[in-house]
Image (tube, rainbow over all chains, first blue to last red; front, side, top):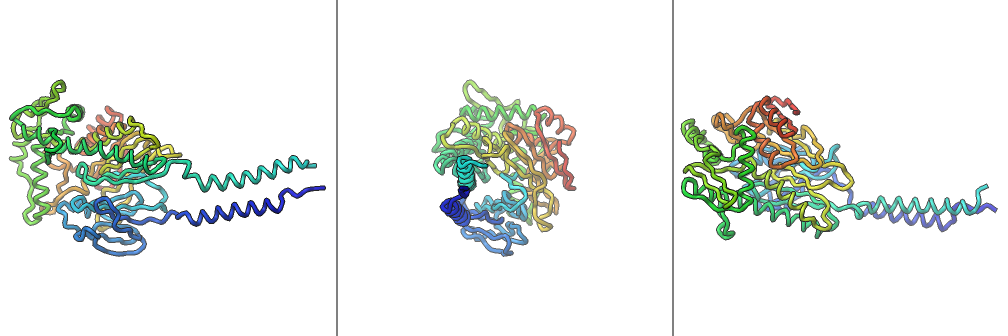
Length: 123
Length: 352
């Protein structure tokens, strides 16, 4: 008498395991596309969707304006004397940053849909 | 005919495989160290971004706090603009303030840094000169004033630059490593370690972090105002990937991309560039890297990036190479066994 390879209970077990796995997979937050985080004094004050063009001043640093355009972000206005932040220009690659030291504002590109994931950027 | 025993074994194997596959794909991250991030604000007048891999939040925090404390003590000791009276310790500003007056007792760390600066001055034939504070402060003052008062923007005069350049000789600095004293013998002379100290401090901090052997800490990448220094390797990878930012593209032209990616295991990567820190007088840009020969900003390249296992060497070399022509630069690159990427204003990239 040939016994079947799998009993009914086995299929239920396999299905249950796969179901739990699928549920966990969906529950664990997926890697988002690229986005920009704005820090003031080392704390995140805004997260910007790079797919939505916008221009806004920074909460906690009202003289600083950040623009999002065509998937990139930049400092476009600041009352700092050196303008290093504005000179940096638009950044878009995950790992790139732009900084306004006098106003303690940092812009960081994050998220992982690039071909190359960079651990850091030298400039 | 397959025997029932074989069938049972097959069945068990399939079940194990499914279970094992699901477990490993779901819990991969709980068995490898987790990635944490931190940002230090205001040390060495820049930002530090830290990527840490550790078994737990508390292990990561211990590593981050250790690194921060290290960098903070170096920042205070190497500061030329502020004293820290409450710390009770003399720093580079104290040495500068006592130029032509008296020797100043300092920490062994300051002696080590200055000895390193002097060695790099000799090795680079004066291209990286931390005793050029007199010249650099003229440019620093001009840049600060002109940036805030663009209508009255100015460039230091050749006469004042040449007078200051007479006060840039390491022979006039007495470093006594036995008594831990430093004496700048000429009044008006001063130290400015801005082109070296950040790299040196980052390298030393990472070295000490390694030696501290913090339990549960796996590895870390320190990006200190663009100086990148690794401590160990990221989990399950053979190197860190560092991007070199495009120095050439205009602000309004396009997005500033990445022109090159570099894989590192134990090397520091440091860039010197002219496109972020500069000021403008009569439509001419004046960047912050001053050539000791011309006493004016170096203009050969838009950016030079150096890769070398010693973070202090990499930092000093990036400045020296930015100043020197390619031929003299090559001598230094070979002498130190470094790698370099030059980016010209035309966008041409030369890898040496």
